[in-house]
Length: 607
Image (cartoon, rainbow, N blue to C red):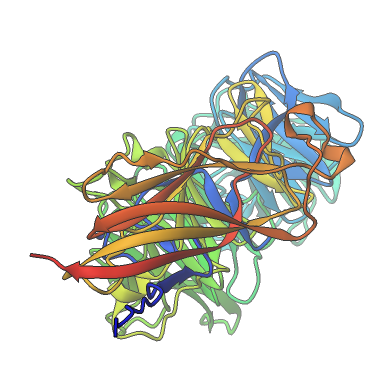
């Protein structure tokens, strides 16, 4: 009797990646040591509307005749510094209005404070939606109860660093004509104003060198009835305010004072309460070693955080009483961190209730808390994309100190040299309750984009508007960059299928593709024997079904409504490792998928 042989079907296993790409780019670890949803090579991809696909597209909103130097927003309009002018741009009707002229063609900074917008450049400009003009510095009443000969007075207000004007208030005695001011060497020929009993008079002469005013007729006797306003320029004081590059509004429990820093002296200056025209002479403090200047501010809870290149300070607010029983506000600083600092001023942002910034030494950092005695109040969070000798990344970017951070749509986007390193903090928020900071940082989703050039930006009507040269551009959900294709690719990790000692055969691959955007995906199969990849002959394509997005290059007879799963026969035999590279360089076409699966079989042990 002949015995028949029996055959059994080959036994295949499945490796599934339910959220491909959602772990972001990781160039720190080896390609075969990544989490299944991370990628060793990824460009212009992100999670948009909860689905993995191409990043935001770019379009031009407005082109101007000259380069845009700075951008701000106020009362539903965009304010721009273009050449020597401030221009108001109305997005709704695409109209422009000249607000001010006479600036230097050099970048300054917009400041939104106390219901106004200010511009600090070579001039200090204010705009209240009606009138745009140079700021008129407050003239402090530096003393009252002053005797005409200057032998006694009570000091009540500090001199204003911002301006030249100051007041002296005297008791008139009815007989004295000569009134001695607190200052000599007044600005020669400057205007001097005199009021006697509330009425302005011009019957006087001025000795500018001696700081004396001589009335033609002695003012009448009275209590604080003679007020003299004079001018004395202290250019060093004025420069201490005008040369600053960073600002913050802070007052402890509110934003009642304007803080300025970055004039090259490690000092911050702060205004009087809700008054950006008055910076009292003594309203300043030095943070740390004067060798390093302040590089920016941030607010976390009730603390103002002051950044320097290699240290961080926290400033608190409290009240005290002087000897006369009057309450006085004081600010005190304490060091939060040494070693960690910020030398990329425009990287500072507030993300998910925490301050975040970047450093050319450590990459992107996060302030866990402002508890001074905690030794772990700063953590490095960009280890996945910092780069190194094996592969370049964030820390190898040229001119990194000029990087600009955009905080939008749950993403922290650090822009430099046309490149963007974007952390999706809504998808992967940083856990501050961890004993293993490096492992926590490894789990954050970072994405890398190119061809996004940003000089400055604002968020406006839930959009990102940014400037580059003479153009006002917009990030949006379109699938093109200014009418050009957005090239994108995504590579899976290299998988050994938890069997590094075995050879495998990859039988099939399944890709689930979203159906509501037109897309085209090219595929390459990568193995240890063919690191450049073997092309899949059949692309994956989804046609458009939305008439408002109609274009002939995205149109076809077949479309799907929700998602469609495509199967491809790989037939990759006897390999140790396997991965796939998906790419797309087509105009107006997405590359978006939500699930990957590989059907494989363990063949035999590696010899």
